Length: 245
Image (cartoon, rainbow, N blue to C red):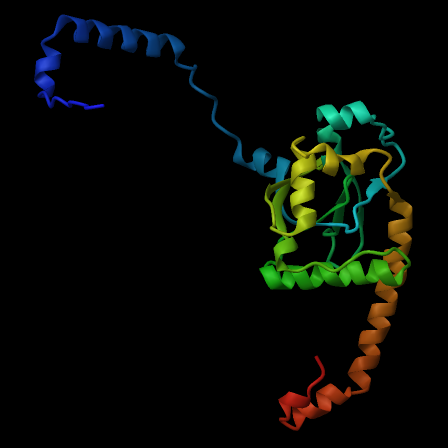
């Protein structure tokens, strides 16, 4: 197909009655549809409603149960039709003390999301991954199996009204992609079947495990400071090739 493009000076269109009429009609329509002037935004109150956070997830997948929450009951039809209550997956269920200065703590969402504040010294990507892995190690030592994350297992998001944990930029790891899909109601039936009678862990059990695990890690760190490891010895001797990894 041959297309012909004519370049016509704009003032030619201006002199055409139909052009003037269409412009006037558009201006009238735009004025009619214009929204009323918005009230000034209270930045301070808005900031209190949306708090930035760094996110990762319990892996393997588990839902977190706590007192006062509506029971999670979905059917196979919900899975097949993608009609589960995805907003409920964002709900904040509580927090855990992980050794951060008050009032900061680890926030947990119903779908197993773990949220930390982006404060120093954990406001860099690698530092956040290491801190998350320390908390996951504490849970493991406390008796709740979970796996470490890598840098691609980190999301950035926010806590909204202290009721919901929302991810804005998902990591590339498989758990992150899975949670992104179920949180937006887009997961396939093959993936979303995990939401049907999912494995759960109680918030109280997480608190107990975290307390036990952090105590073990703190005592181990104190012991390591008193007794230099062989890896530390080789490092001091500038024989980095023999340093334990």
